[in-house]
Length: 152
Image (cartoon, rainbow, N blue to C red; front, side, top):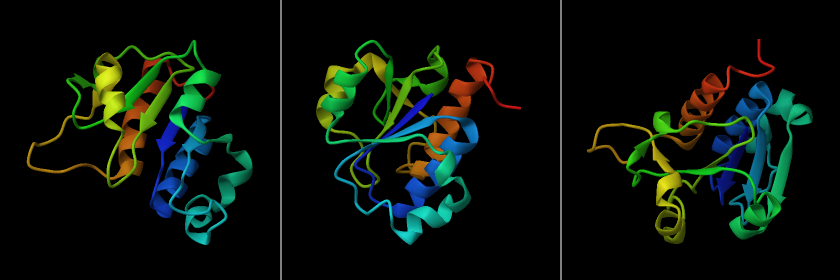
């Protein structure tokens, strides 16, 4: 599995997500600009013992990522999707894309890829879940569907 963070802003969220990726074997793809340096203590503290086990990649845009992996499935997590994250049939090498904490994903993604947009069900009077919690929920559902490859 592949986790993509589009312009993440909060270091502890990215650190927690990095730790989750290391524990599950998911690759982490970060789209610049980042709201912090990945050398910052706040990021590393959340996954300090795991950074050497993390498969991490950096890109200057979503377009660059799409061009590198044209044959892969991309799913975009947003509050504005019709499809629940559980209504997708995930494959082992899929990309799960999450937007920045304050603004989510760019509008063009929601307009261009409506069938690939997914959401986590929640009450309508609550703005959103924490980014690292959202990544965990969607990632573990995707891993469950593919029978948790290489996990004990």
